[in-house]
Length: 134
Image: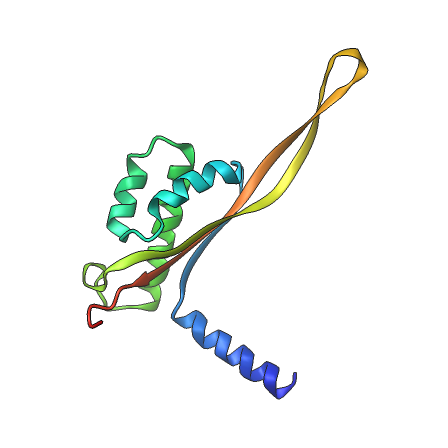
């Protein structure tokens, strides 16, 4: 590996130590439905986001709640000895990407067939703490 690539790899490695991420891959709901719930909690503080997700009636809210708890535990693993209440955690980024698509055929009249696309998605949550000094 060249020196530039090596330096870049080291810099990316250092950035990952301060980034707190949780990912959910191949979730069997359509990305459009998941984005409705994801947009609600983007930028919110973690405790408010958990409360919102708990009382949202959408199925994707349950999956996002579990994913957000995973992101919080990832933050705790990297910041031992720091209390969550004092750190002012918030949802810095949340994005929903399209996952793989299962393609099926449904029989239709007169020898035709309709295509059914069963969509899935990938969700990524990035949690960060707000600095009270700024």
